[in-house]
Image 1 (cartoon, rainbow, N blue to C red):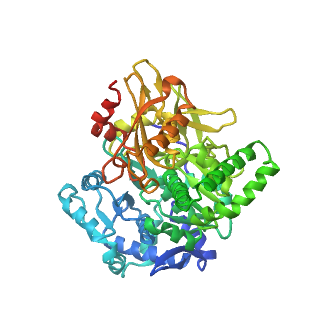
Image 2: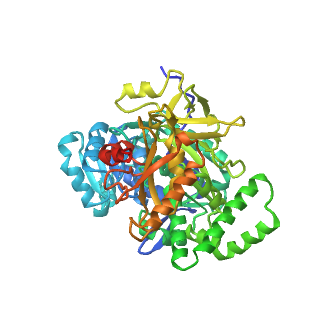
Image 3: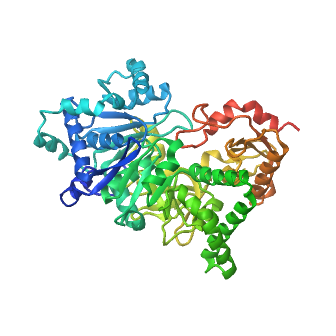
Length: 577
């Protein structure tokens, strides 16, 4: 029997009811409707949840039943999530970009009895694989009026009947099955309880009062709610009264940020890279590239100086000039009111972290996994050490194995994988320690540093162990580089595959100037490692890696195994002398 830490009591629906008596008329969410933001009070949100929940009850959804949510990030996603919890059922999110085979696997493996999908296209994807999901009884489509349809089903269900079901929920009840995005093998369903999430929130809110406590606190979700990182911000916002908006329209993201004006944003590193690269490309297109480069270096220098004391007079003067010329426009791209941002899912890199802090938007980097209900560690406004992922959250323990693998123990760690006892036993020991698969270090004062992925360590023919993550992150710092994958396992030296951000570089991919720019990025990366670990050769690929071509997960992680498999000949050619 695994020794799990005690969970915070209660369930996630309590967060709504605890605030309702005193805050029913306060704005809790924002909905983008007909080109404008519509305020939604907590009372209206509660009404929408409970009417949908009554419909689920009338449709025969039982406590513990699994209900799939397949949709982009939108207001109805959050309403349905809480409605599913209200009747004691389990939400099973699926990325709306998932392939038919992925949808089929999750529906069949979870034993889902119902699915709430966004569009007719999503519905067709589900209907096509119904034979593989024999437990599936209902499919409701949001764009075809699912909310009204389900609400009508529950017209005769009383408040007392609904509350009697909700009241049976405890912290131990399963809240969600989140399937890992699957950089290798079939996705596994992570069993996360109400107590896992509530314990995660207790630690995160305590550590980050600057984000959640202000009266005007707000955030705009644009990451997929199928991602545990976005999901925790959703439930954290509802718990703390932080105004929550939703948008999935990436092409209009800057406009939506500008009108919603969040006080903090969350994103994966790729988003922060794109904001920077877009600004850099525009500056060069307008003939102001050198000014932007000087502004970038000033911001980085200003941030680094803040770590070692106050920036000098000359640096402060330059910073003030660039704040008026450059930094204000970059802050406006994030809505103009965001002092803080949160980054997770992959390493941000020191350069970008210093750059954003230098322009006045401090990016707080943390670390966690789906299996840990998101964050295990986080940097805070008062205790930030760039280059680390911060200190463990309250009640969370960390240890480092002899081979460098990080393990954690805490109340946010999941109970195991759905229908996969072997994988659970491989991940969690009998004392409740979860082996992350990531390599890292812990400073004397408790800051955690991620150094690589255990299974991705490259061992060259000369026996040198190389952690590719640091090299890849450094190369990706180039404004022209989209993705980088370091290779060389069993080879005489280390090489790399590079893809290009064609929004930043609009010229030919065989242009010598582009190769020179990538070579500079490689040289910068190599300066941080020994000669035996350095990248000796690289290949610029003709096509970027995306979800559509199967090389990226929905959270923008490279599917290393897929690249190694499908680009085998390209990789082998790098090592032909």
